[in-house]
Amino acid sequence: MTTGAMERFFKEGHGSIPSARLVTRRAFLRTLFLMAAFLLVYHVMSSVELRSSFANVRDSVAPVLQSTPTTAAAGGEQAFSNAGHKGEFTQQQPPQMGGGPKVTLGKEKATLLMLVRNRELFQALGSMRMIEDRFNKNYHYPWTFMNNRPFTADFIKYATGMASGPVEFIQIPRDHWSVPDSINRTIMDDGMRKLRNEGVIYGGSSSYRHMCRFNSGFFFREKALEKYEWYWRVEPDVEFHCDLNYDPFTFMRENKKVYGWVISMYEFESTIPTLWKHTKAFIKKFPSFLAQDNSLNWLVDGANVTKAFDNKEIEGDYNMCHFWSNFEIASLDFFRSPAYQSYFDYLDSQGGFFYERWGDAPVHSLAVSLMLPREKIHHFADIGYLHAPAGRCPADDESHSSGRCYCDRSTSFDHNQYSCTPRWFKLNGVTTGALMPIEPNTI
Ligand code: GDP
Ligand code: MN
Image (cartoon, rainbow, N blue to C red; front, side, top):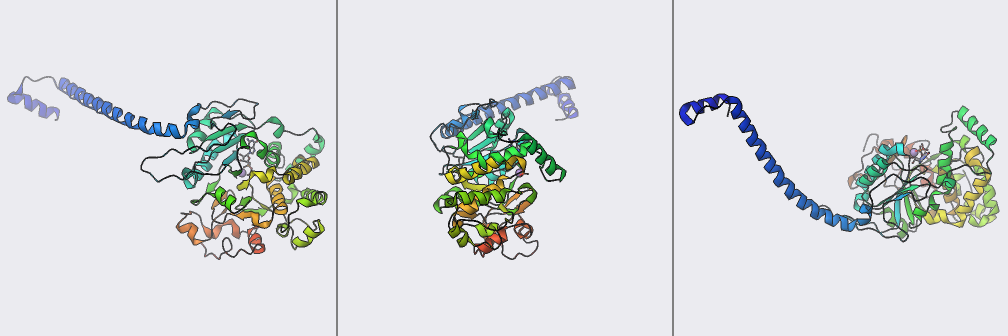
């Protein structure tokens, strides 16, 4: 009713005429009362509903809710943990969302693993969101975050919020992230200066060297990983382009796979000038670690795998092919094995992580290619993945029709001249997957 209409109403004998302001105030108060009453009823109804669904969730993910995240304490290896994973591995029940799709719980002793800095929180959440939406929301595998510094309260809060499974935040012990006494600082500084002057990426960075050495020789030794058999390495700021409608850890176990990868490429030679020489010397020293039917011919053009195995000696030059280790789904037991550990120790004693700039990608790749039979290495042809600047897209139709891939097959890095994947396919007799002919601009 407008004020004018009200005046007419009163004039027509329905009562004395109150002031227009009074009428407006009464109408306002009445509306306010009605709104408050409505809000009260709504609040009571929804909190009853919330409480009952919270009770379900609490019973199923009790360990996650056990302790409120706080800033990780400095110094300790397991500085912060709210996962409830203490000692023995126990897989948590997932929260059952009412009415929604039924969740399949991941059954493997596996974790999503991210080494990350606090300042990369936003990029970490981006990667987490994609893995959760495309895969983990149906499996609820735990996340393990590692950092050489204490994680901030914000990092813990938001990463915990993004995860659909338990989370653990680990501070790496100092001796897994420091320059060993055996390293000659002058040679190290000279090496860093040289690579920086040459414009090599991360050439002058000591933190990058710590990271590469940690990923080469230490991540699998952290206590928090003892309860796991498998890890899926995730980096901040990566993208996953397709649904993963099966459990890759179960796939790896059932098919007796050890190492899974998606992108391969050539390493910058200036970062590893002596890595191959030392690798050959290591195999010469420990020939029993060279696997029969290894992948030497992927690493060395024209190599004779059988001859190398029979002679217990590797010949030829390294062509720089390696699996891009920012994505890995792999067995922790492989890295814990005497073969890998003695390989790492041997390399570490040569100082190349600091004097040169050995990356964990070539180190993992050389170990995997030489110490494992080729059938234990798996290329995840159905995973669409981007770590700038390289991204690859499944080539098969099925991945796009039922896996809801959202990536352009024609620009896949698999077709790039710097990809070593066509070489892998050729040597391993793979005729489907990355090498399928693609019309430009077809998704
Ligand atoms: P790139 O992929 O070779 O360009 O190197 P990144 O900068 O992505 O580093 C590789 C991984 O190690 C990423 O997960 C980073 O978050 C992580 N990382 C690199 N340097 C550090 C560091 O100093 N501290 C921590 N905690 N993580 C690091
Ligand atoms: Mn990266």
